Length: 211
Image 1 (cartoon, rainbow, N blue to C red):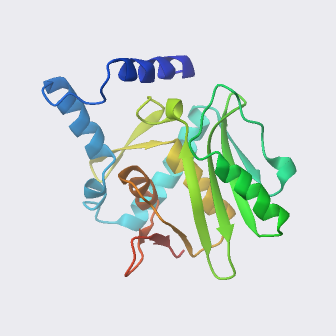
Image 2 (cartoon, rainbow, N blue to C red; image 1 turned 135 degrees about the horizontal axis):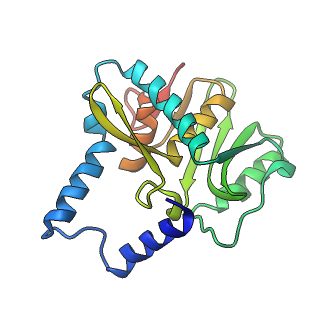
């Protein structure tokens, strides 16, 4: 599904004035199927989480290749790509904060995912002495799984969906040292991190990966 088709899909959802109709059998079925493919509950059924995380990572890389998604790893202000006026990010201020951290001499890294030379997602991680914090990840709305930019995979006879969010976290993992952690605040981000091998840090709500 190309970008224009995805934009129309999101526009139609917004035009309908709803994301979900509880009285529609079709909506109920679609919502259940999609939620089940991206849920913590389904991930908990996996018998070998470590091997599954390797599959998710491998498939995320394949997904990127199949859709022609390019990764830009920025470790300096000069390597931060330009943003297209057609794309809107809720947490764009995080990029300004990242630039400020670089000015202060902090050790930080940002990854940007581009589709046809357009930034559609980014993630930022702050490197500390003993660990790395993923400060933010964001996928613009027209490039989300909900918009149709996704891939379905099967692990242990269970169906899952992967998307650009997994690719962002994968590239951060490749660019940062472990242990690495994130404060995942919603179900979508929890699914993304846990699919790639993050587990709950004991005594906190954070998700962590030690190796």
